[in-house]
Length: 302
Image (cartoon, rainbow, N blue to C red):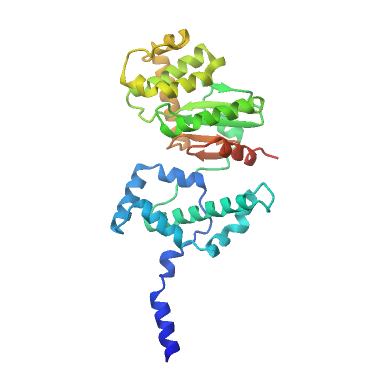
């Protein structure tokens, strides 16, 4: 009798397995999770669901994180550990990968409970395919098309994550200068207002007039973008080419190029920035130098 009572007590006090132990057939990628979280509609859904649980979304995430067991992580370990480029003796690398798996399980469970479908991008687009789908005739680009890596970036100078990522992208473009073919495509946060397009329009002009210093101009645009859309006055203490292009904010030719990039990106399925395409792989969200190096290692091909 005591054994029966003990069994009943343990069973009745345990967490429901279906509630806490949902495991998708395959884990969503980090990029697809970021892509899903970039949607304002999805964020509203998640926050509303968290509210019904009486907690914030961050608290919900931390709660789910505690419920992910080592057994759950091991469920995906054999298929995920190939990402480890260093020796299996590197315990820090192993810990980072296992934590990454944990977070992806967490978001899978949260999305499942909120009835949100994870956005996935096609990962099988070859270089020839993606380049055939974009117009690069008047687009800022660095390097040679046959370089080891092809990188396409969609961004806006008003985007905080883009601004955070660009210094690291610039380091990579300098370090691997002769091995990267880089294309910059415009994706305005607000494509309806010409005033909000000013930094991108000026960027087009700077590429047109001074392509050899384009990455320096990009850095400058990130620094002054918000001031540019708040005022029609030129940014002081700039080079002559910058001042010349700053006066071209309403030039139809450049405005049209920016808007065509925006329409083109939407047809490709780009919905958030920064978005990168690197040798067939889509990356959504900010990157630092370390993560850029990891992306290049993973996409260097045979």
